[in-house]
Image (tube, rainbow, N blue to C red; front, top):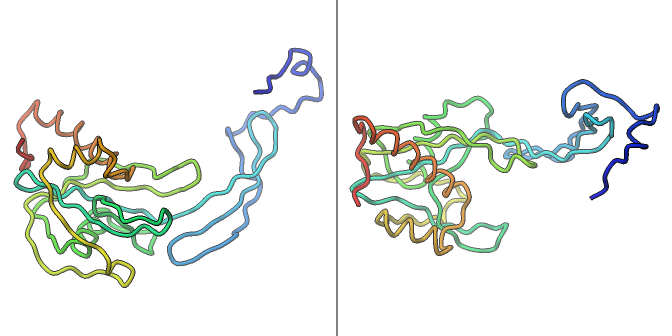
Amino acid sequence: MATCTDALCDREDTPTYSGPEILTLSSREVYRNKWLRLREDEILRSNGQNGIYGVVDKHPGAIILPIDSGRVWLIEQFRYTIGERVLELPQGCWESETVDPEELARCELSEETGLTAAKMTHLGTLWLAYGFVCQPLHVFLATGLTSGPNDRDDEEQDLRVQSVPVAEFEEMMLDGTIRDSCTLSAWGLFQVWKSKTERGTPSVDEPQR
């Protein structure tokens, strides 16, 4: 990696900048559809150097961890970007910037799996791949599950639903069967929440080991 020598840093013409760490000078939209927007920004870094930054803007999303009777409900679907069928937790977003996170989570759970939850617990919010994507992802624990019909979109007709014991779900993450980063992150967040909950009085139907 190139480093700045004392002689170079002492030059009088070295740019100085005391504003935000990265300042947006201009922004242009490169591409847009109903799911995302791609923009390229001209930026000024805090060291005075100009550059560009490509950003994908997406609407807020939700990922749901449905647990009941010691089992976790998963979705299997084909992911075009990697050319594989994969297992992951139910998740998705709407084509709208202003959504109620719990309403979004309940709808995604029902649409993809046909499940409704007696209780939804908000575990936290993640940033999805914020090196180039601007999208918050709300994480919900769904308990007290009831089965019903699903209401999938046209692009979701290949979805398959399955439930597995918690121990098997964890083994799938360890052996690489499940490699979805959102699913792994949601499970990690749940484990932290569960640990804190168990120090007091548990308030939800916790998975049985």
